[in-house]
Length: 253
Ligand SMILES: NC(=O)c1ccc[n+]([C@@H]2O[C@H](COP(=O)([O-])OP(=O)(O)OC[C@H]3O[C@@H](n4cnc5c(N)ncnc54)[C@H](O)[C@@H]3O)[C@@H](O)[C@H]2O)c1
Image (cartoon, rainbow, N blue to C red; front, side, top):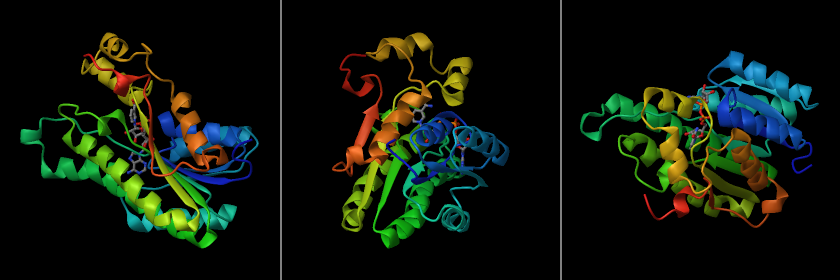
């Protein structure tokens, strides 16, 4: 088991990719703090983690609020003794044309997708520095690599996550902390399903633009997250691993 008895905090773990990370981490032996804005969803996933024989602590946390994030880390240490792994997964999208994007809407997306990653990394990082050990994996996106029209706040935040990953990796290597990111392509989650239903994008478009010709399943992203959090990645830090079916490698349209 690659995360045997390690203690992992996963934000936005109530559904989608975060839930898949919680279940995959538990299957690899980790105890999991299931953190989400939606406490009912966090409790449901915590039950699924317990069914795998691991400890689970569901918490309602807004990653944009420093005091709540600090409390999340303190509650984790109180319940599980330490923080070995942080997965910064909570994220939102806020589509709209840049020329009319409101300041409030820009702030809302950047607060979750970039500031939230910093606040959680900082709070967990302080604990990991004290432990002289820790692994942080943040969920970026192919939107950090290429421009998606109507996604200014999201793309800029995800590119910020890639840069922040490099900075924290360099600062905290001396404390035995590795910091990496995973950049998913299109994943079979509620966000993508909504986009398909609204006609923002079609499944045929995604399949044509993706060399592997399909959406990712959430567990395919979670498996890369667990790899980066495990000792199998012991010499990898500051990297963003794109898990995108070849999307960023593709040179045509
Ligand atoms: N789905 C995709 O195709 C895709 C592709 C690339 C990157 N991503 C990224 O992966 C991550 C997860 O995406 P998903 O598709 O599973 O999303 P999702 O919307 O299904 O789940 C996101 C979860 O985050 C929680 N959340 C939102 N704001 C929060 C906050 N302020 N504090 C705490 N929790 C909060 C939500 O309650 C929800 O449970 C996001 O960072 C997203 O940007 C997704």
